[in-house]
Length: 215
Length: 156
Image (cartoon, rainbow over all chains, first blue to last red; front, side):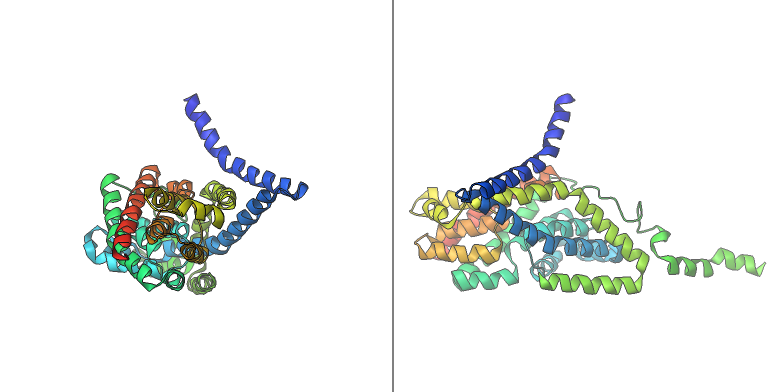
C-alpha cells in the first residue's frame, strides 16, 4: 500500500521534475554561454510547446463538439462492431484528411470510441493516422522520392491493420478510460442537454399536459 | 495547422448559433479532458527538449552509417524514441541519404518514427490504458521492422 502510494507520488512528480531539469539546463546556459546544450534543450522544448499550443486547444474543442453533436448511432453504424471491414475505408479517409502529429489523434480516437467505434477500429484509425497522411506524403515524396513513399504506404497498410486486429485480440473488452461526460452522466438520454429551446418545446408538446388541457 | 484552427472556429461558430448551451457543454468536456492529461503533456515537452538536443544530424549519421543489422536496429530505436514533426524528419532523412545511409536504415527510421512513440507513451496510457498503449507500441515497432525489411527488398 505504502509502496504503491510512493510509486504514485513518483509518477506525479516525474513530469514536473523533467520540466525542472529543462529549466535548470536552460538557466545554466544563460549563466555559462559556452554550455550550448542547455540552450538547445530550452529552445527545442519551447518550440515543441508552441507546436502543441497551436494544435491541442483546437483539437479538444473539436472533440468536445463531436461529443455533444454527433449521434451515437451514426458512429456505431459506420465504425462499430457490426460495420465489419467496411469500416476500414472510412477510418482511412478520416485519418488521412486530418493533419498534425499522432498525439493529436489520441483524443479523437477516444471520442470515436465513446460513440461506439469498436476497439479494433480505434487502433486501425491510429495506425492509419500515423502512417498515411496526405500533407506529410508531399514532404516525403519531395525528400525521399515517390518510390520510397509508395512502397512505404502500400506495405504499411496491411501492417497497421494487422496491428489493430492484434491489439483488439490482446486487450479483450477494451474501453476508453472514463472522462467525465458533459453535463454529468449519460447525456445521450438526458433532456437538459437538448438545450433550453428543446426543453421548452418538450413542455409545449408534452402529451400529458395536452391531456390535462382536454379534461 | 492553420486549416485546423480555421475549421475549429467555423465549427464553434456554427455550434454556438445552433445551440449555445450544448456548445459550452462540449467545450467543458474538451477542457476537462485536456486538464486530465496535462501532467503527461508537461512530461512530453520536457522529454522532447532533452532528447532532441542530444540527437543532432551528426550523431544520427554516425549511428546510421555502415551496413549490417546494427544501423538498422539503431534506426528503429531512434525512430521509436524521437518525436520529430514530419516537416523536419523527411528533410533530415533526405540529408542522411545524401550522406550514404542505406534505404533499409532510412525506412526503419521513418516507419518507426511514424508508428511508434515512446515519448508520447505516458500520454497514450492516459487515453487508452496501460495494456493497450504498450501493446500498440510494441506491435507497431515489430510492424515497422517488417515494413522496413520488405521496403529494403522491394527498393533494391
